[in-house]
Length: 193
Image (cartoon, rainbow, N blue to C red; front, side, top):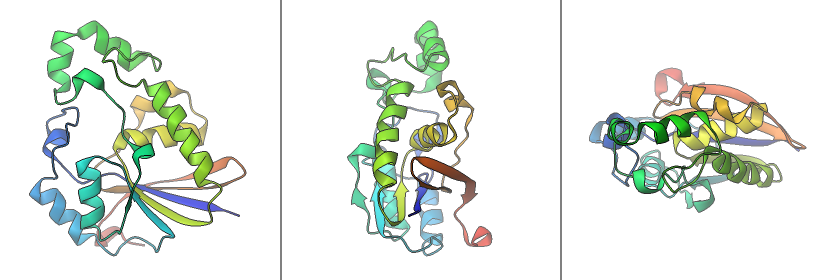
C-alpha cells in the first residue's frame, strides 16, 4: 500500500512578511484571496488536516478543505520568541540565535528544538504511512522542512536550507518506512496538473 501526503504551506500573513515568529495573526487579505483562487486545484483526498495555527486553519478554509484539527502537526514552538521578529531577537540575543541556527538540539527560546520537531513529525509520518489514500494537510513551513529532512534521511542541520514559499504543495509518497518527495509547486491554476 502506498500512502500519499500533500503538505501545503499557509498563505501570506503579516508575521511571515515581517519575518516575525508567528503569534497567531490572521492571513493577509491578498493571501486569503490567493488561497480562495486556488480552491479546487488539489486532488481528492481521503482526509484533510490543518495545523492549529490561525494561518493554517484559515488557508485550509480558503482552499475549501473540510479540514480536521491536527495539533500533532503544530509548527515549531519558539517559546518566548513568539511574536518577535528575527531581527529583534538577533539584536537582543545574537549568541542564542546563532546557536539555534547551528545546533538542531538547541532551544534557547525555551520551546522546542529543531531535533524535537523532526522527531515529533517523524512519528506522525510513521502513522500516515499506515493510512491508505491521500492526506492533504495545511502546515507551517517548518513542518514541511521537518518532513523533508526525515523523508530524505538528511541531517537535521539541512532544516534551515529548505525554502518553503507561501501556498506551495509538497507531496510525499511512501510505504514500509520509505518516503519519496515530489518537490513543491505553487497552488494556483496556472500550475495545476
